[in-house]
Amino acid sequence: MPGEFDLIRRYFDSISGDHPSVQLGIGDDCALLTSSPHTELAISVDTLVEGVHFLPDIDPEVLAWRLVASSVSDLAAMGAFPKWLTLACTLNGPTREWLAAFSKGLAEACHHYSLILVGGDTTSGQQQVFTAQVHGEVPLGMALKRSGAKAGDAIVVSGTLGDSRAGLALLTAECESGSDYLLERYYRPTARLALGEALRGIANSAVDVSDGLLADLGHLLTASGVGAEIHTESLPLSADIKDLAPDLAERWALSGGEDFELCFTLPQDRVPELQQISERLALPLTLVGKITQQTGITLLKSGEPVPLPASLGFNHFGNEHE
Image (cartoon, rainbow, N blue to C red; front, side):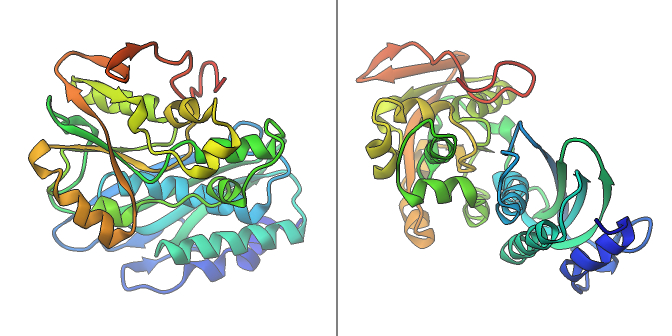
């Protein structure tokens, strides 16, 4: 393994690029950045830990993509657009081939999401850990927040839910065989940046589905001081997940996590605007419930309440998914 500065020069310098907003990037004690006028900075950080968030034998290109996409998804949830990235890596004796593949995946993700790598840190350790901090911008006063949901709002989710959990089931042999689509949904999640931008001024609140729909919606409800009704028959499920695990698809959609879709609320009289947004983005947007004054989440099947699943989603400091 090369030394720290040689490692940075070989595998990360080329990702830094040139941009008018970067006055000073990789190579000094700090990056110096210039933000755009009439915007607010949106900053989010995500950490992926070997054995917790990714399998030890994961393809390093896939790891890099997932690291960036999961962080950028937080920007999407607030209606922000990405600008800069800092990266901290704890490495456990990677080969040059591993580093080259990780660097390639990182470069692809940065290019896809218009990110510039402006700094970071590298160290060695017994367990591999990767932390990405993304910096974005959102027009002043236009950020989507978790705290704006109002009683009567429609609850909408993008895309389909549970696919990433199904892909993980294939990787861990929990399920014997399934489609490449489900694996791709796990390997290369998509942050819904264009949707977040389109929802500015329309949605009252938003959150990205990283830990599971019920868990992340729960965070939004707590921040807003409201509750929700969710109709299970309205959950958007792909044909692939229904073919793979018809008995598990609903549970995975509710609490599987790592779909990185957006869950948002908006006034009922703004719902008709979603069709045009959906068509323009070629992205399904599905009404799955409504916000209630009474706190907590009520699951409804054919109009009748049903119990919540034992696990609402991923919990970093408790029981993980069942």
